[in-house]
Structure formats: C-alpha cells, structure tokens
Length: 246
Image (cartoon, rainbow, N blue to C red):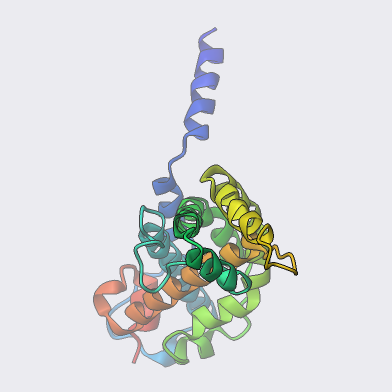
C-alpha cells in the first residue's frame, strides 16, 4: 500500500513539473564541463566547444524570450510584437470600423495577442528539441561570424519544423482564448455585407504561428548579441571561454 502511494505521489509530481523547471533545463542544455580561464584564445577553441557554446546561447535566448512574451501584454502591449490582423484581413477590419463595428475588430485583435502570449508558455520543449537535434557543421565560423549568426543559422535550419510543431499549440490557444470565435465573427460579419462579393477567410492560425515564432527568434537574436558584447551575460564557463576568446 505504501509503495503504491509513493508511486501515485511520484506521478503527480511529474505531471506538475513547472515551466520554471523546463526553462532551467533549457539553460543547462549544452553547458560544458570544461573549466576555463579568462585568457582563452580563438586558436584554443575546438569545434565541440563552439557547438556547445552556440547551443547554450540559443537556449538562453529561448528562456529569456519566453519569460518576456509569456505574460499579459507580452505581445499586445509591445510596439514590436503586437499582432493586428492578417494582411488579407486588414481591409475587413477597416471596412467594419467604418460601419461602426470597431469593437468587434478590437476584440479579435486583443484575443489574437492573448493566444500568442498563452502559447509561449508551451514553447520551451519544442524549441529545446530543435536545439538538441540541430547539427552544427561549422560552429567555429558561426562563433566568429556576425552578432546574430548563430540565431540566423538556427532560424534557417529549424523554422519550418518549429512552425509545424508549434501550430497545434497555437490552435489550442486561439480556441481557449476565444480568439477563433471573435475572428470568426469578424469574418462572418464582413462576408454578410451586401457590398462583399468575394467571400474571404484568411488563415488565422498560420498568421499567429508565424508571428509568434518570429518574435521568439528575435528575442534569441537579442540574447546572442548580449552574450557576444557583454561579459556579464556569459554566465557559464563555456560561454566565457568561447565568446570571451580574443
């Protein structure tokens, strides 16, 4: 009986692993066990060192980005990341505002952003998996490259996969925040207008997925720039060794 109770408690504990724990694992993704000094030179950096540092820098960027975006107004309150309507739906929003239905448009926009903010809470394991599986064939040149060269490499190799993995999360978030309903009401109202001859239904899920993934990539890039430029941001031995090398 005691053994069974312990197993139940263990199961409950596992099911309630917090987002903070996931992010902590993310930060430790590629940490090296190498102890270094502050006088490392580029010639002493191996391909393995470079790959470990790049993956850790990317993981730190994911962690920082999620913490910034996975909160109320992470998107809606941001001049940089706030989502409006898909390009194909801009005309719809403008038309409805002119007809006195601005509140309908505003509700849709608000809930679209709330869905992105909520979805970011589930982004960590998806991005962690992509970082783990990413093959780095020229890590040393990425270290020596531009301020966001590692981020751009990660983006070029994983964007399609990340969007595919993140899309179901976005859909669930759109549904749970009522964004799907408000957006549907918006489209339905427009399509019912006597002046609407061509019925429309722009893809909301793909729009939000793309915007959310791009926002997180932008945050990853900013963290990479910070690690390269700011010694204080190099919080582990491998980051100090690789990005502090002269």
